[in-house]
Image 1 (cartoon, helix red, strand yellow):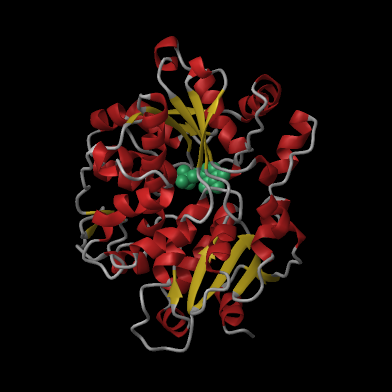
Image 2 (spheres, helix red, strand yellow; image 1 turned 180 degrees about the horizontal axis):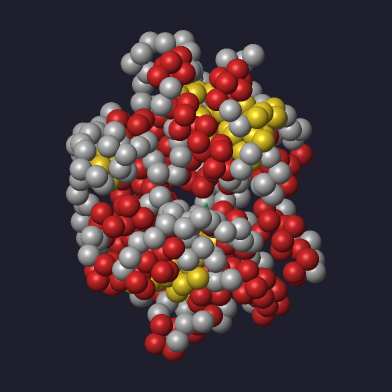
Length: 434
Ligand SMILES: *Cc1c(COP(=O)(O)O)cnc(C)c1O
């Protein structure tokens, strides 16, 4: 399989697309063609690892990763992905729980897959120095990447986050690793962290000396495994309920939703795809007006979705350049903080479900559907465990949120982080271990 940039560069092989992250022309890598699967392709596959291997075969064919695909999928899909029907059965409503990984959010899937691939790319440079995965995070990405690469020989992770601007448990998940993970609390906003990453990558000396590598959310290696869980969930749904699933996906940078769109374009049994956004309305307004206008992001309760210029928009527009076509493929609905609060409070009693603020946007969108849409079999995509955002959820529901074992284990570990001003010299000193 060849990979091409959304802006025209390429083609390159999968290894190069994974290692580069961003295409040389500034675009994002996409598979040159999308394979078409007949549903019976998966007739003998039920668990996520087997479905993953079958689904990803055409995407890895011809690359150095083709032979290792079984191992990569076993390594990456090492925790449960759960599709669970909610009562009553007549309502045809299910939840896809993507938060059973080490840091309790769906980003564990992409990060683990990317790490599993990179660990098997083979180091042609016969070099004793580790590759440095440099990542800026506004919350969930950094913990997932640290967890995925922690303890892997040949890698070092450097995570930068805006001090004081992530939730207490997120901060803990960023700084509890030690070993080959260095956590930097930056005196500045997320944008400053992201700028430092860009500066470091475009500084030839630093990039070479530390063998910098990126793992950010635009890497195609994070999108492919996300398409796998939509393939699996749609097959499970079809088998259990005899009808195709429609998904409501909490959306920020559009990576998760883009993966669902790709799975459907590959022929998996998926009906509607609805994007649930918070008060950041860029996508909603674009679909309504046809004019794309990036905005500064606004802070909301669903903070992992506080994005004013979704990076994967470029991939969606690459697949469907005409706005009319795009409108037929996805719809989007914006949910306010007040509605998020109300949904969390109501569903704790009405449905007996605890949602994280992101998942609550999807539940809200569902409950506002008109009668025609309500007839479809909907799946709410649960992107994080509510215990990860207990400081928001607990006051609304009035009870403690039980902490899942994997998260509890992380929260017991001691933390270590280094404070740092938002400038490149300070980052250079940290990278050099000074
Ligand atoms: C990152 C994240 C999102 C948004 O996902 P995108 O792929 O950026 O659209 C939603 N919910 C949670 C919990 C997240 O961490």
